[in-house]
Every structure is written in C-alpha cells, then in structure tokens.
Length: 86
Image (cartoon, rainbow, N blue to C red; front, side, top):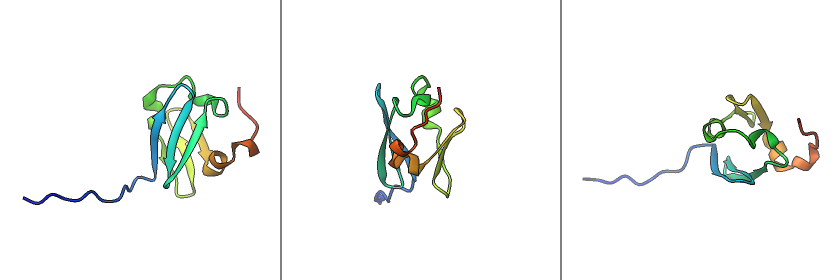
C-alpha cells in the first residue's frame, strides 16, 4: 500500500479564522485581517455566509450570500478607502 504525499494547497482563498473582532483570510498566499470596524457588513452574519466566498481571476472577492464584493487592493490598504456603508 502506498501513501500519497500531500500536495500544494491549490485554493486561492481561504477563511482562516472568524473571531469577535474580525475575519482572517488567506488570498493567494497572503494573509489579511478584515476588522468589523472597517468591514462592518460581516459583523452580524453567520459563518456559512462568510465561508461562501469566491475569488475572480481579476482579484475580486465576492460573497454571493451577502452580495459583497471587495478587491484585494481594499484588503491591502483599507485606509485608502474610508467610506463605510451604514
């Protein structure tokens, strides 16, 4: 019997942690933190809605259950995008 060796993780996006402060995600090998203060749309959602995220070839993240889309650029520099929907 042969055991296979685990290969590389081919997922381009992964939710790593959800806490009372925000969400940690890994996008194309880079880790980001989305605080609920800067990304309030995620605060009162359920885990399944957060986990259901897609990454487009252009680098847009889309949560279809929440109708939220964000660019990786927003994750990298949220201070450059100060408008927050209420």
